[in-house]
Image 1: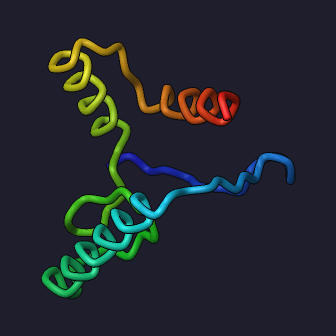
Image 2: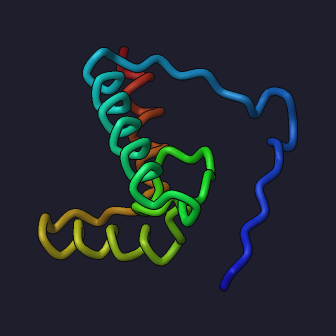
Length: 97
């Protein structure tokens, strides 16, 4: 199994706060309810990872999962997509305000 190491950002200015709307807040709340239900269902086998995007058992999604999702979006929607592109999309939308 591949090991991932998480650490703090390199500089204090690397921390970001973003504004989110009520729609996303509601989606995140429902997703959190789903995670709590999975935690109850999996019991001792549930992994408390404190991540938003997890597998049913609480494990963080792997880079392979993100690569797979990128391929699906590209093949089904004909959009050249990567998870990293979401960062650029967010920045562009902020600049357009």
